[in-house]
Length: 275
Image (cartoon, rainbow, N blue to C red; front, top):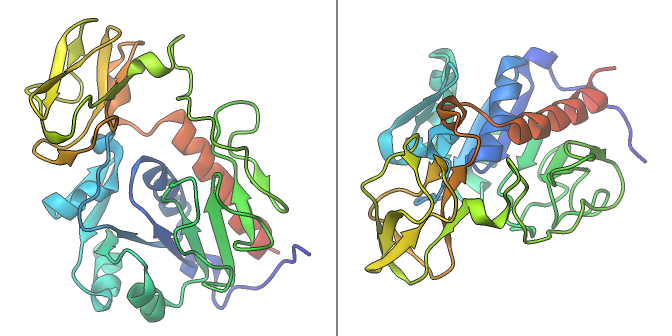
């Protein structure tokens, strides 16, 4: 049964630990920060975000990352979390399984926003409220609540029993294009591009190389995302994203999908805690 509960403190002191700091996790974190919750992010040591301009995980490489007025700061140990909050910044730690950070924070809420299409170790007893984003979780079994991540009518829905829609493997439609807008490496190797996020590219242009094999744009538009230069990529790996709508500002702001998912997480938290 889905029951309401009282937080151990006021709602403005509610602690939310988010696993992942990529595009969707960032949308969730940003919405919760604007709602005055205390947020902490955990990530891998080498995150591979494509939409890097709207992903807090870039702080792993650069020390800090600001997105729409909210700044994340990389800190080495959980004991630095309170100081980051005092500075008005989001603490981000490299702690893939989250055990060290979770033991320190004792969070009220854990959100698994890795979007791996399967559960990477999150358990229903990790916090009083555990939320999983997308497929790979079952509400009432390994998490309390699931939030739908598939584009369409149900995007952002709060699921109290059961699972999200299965992964189709097909990117969502934007401007009439789906698979065509995604850039993928055709060969294993080191990724390199002379292009930058926000650049305009034309169909047929060489956007990058991976293992000395070209990555070619299948449509014209604006480079909304591009994996970090110099990283090792696998064959078939997503390395970029072209937006056919051509709105450069969209490259640097949180997407409608990420905001909708963030709204679903906010609803789940308030419905559980706000009596």
